[in-house]
Length: 114
Image (spheres, rainbow, N blue to C red):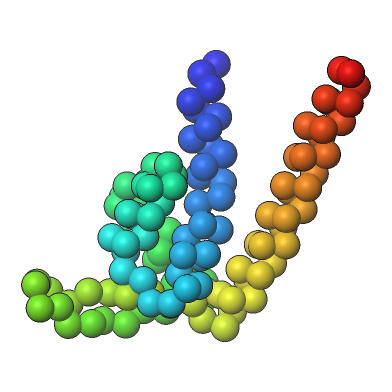
C-alpha cells in the first residue's frame, strides 16, 4: 500500500471544507481558489473543482455572479449563501472535534510509550 494514496484520500476528504472556507472570505474566482489550494499543497485540478462547486451550488450552499472582465470573457465569482455559512460553521465544529480526537490518540500513544 502506498502512503500517497492515503494522503490523497485525506486531502479529498477535507477539500469541500477548505473550499467553503476560502469562499467565506468574500467573492472568489475559481482560479484564485485553485491557486490557494495549490499553495496549501491541496493538489486540485479544474476537473475536480468545478464539479464540486456545481454540487455545492445545487445544494444551495453557494451562489455566483458573473462579473465582466477587461481581459477576456466574464468571470464567475462565488459567495456563500446563508445556508452555506451555517453548513460551514457545522463543518468547523466537526473539524475541531476531529483535530482534538486525533491529537488525543497521538498524545495517548506517546504517553504509553514513555
